[in-house]
Amino acid sequence: MTHRSTDPPPQLGNIVHYREPGGRELVRAAIVTATADTADPAGAPRGAVPALSGREHVHLRVLTPEGDDYVVLDVAHRDFHLGPTPGCWGWPERTRRRHR
Image (cartoon, rainbow, N blue to C red):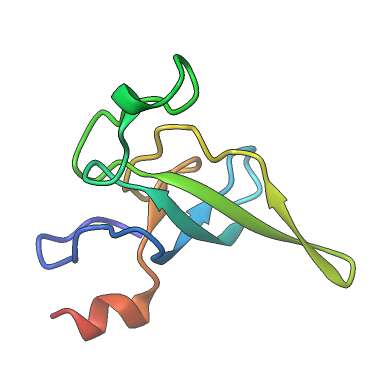
């Protein structure tokens, strides 16, 4: 999940991978809920939608399996950046191959 210059920019609704923090190296599916182009903290109540600190930073909804269901982790309004380390997001390999 390292960034390459050929990677597409994140867009609203993209499905990406999220690497969970905590040392277990778990990768989860996540949906991009805001990008630098779609987040508008100026139009939201104070503290409701934090600004993003870079073009590759996004807000996510992370899906995690719990038994027979999937639970959405409540991490939507955090400033996630693209990278290979825990707590970051990255592109699934199929997305990378399609955009080369």
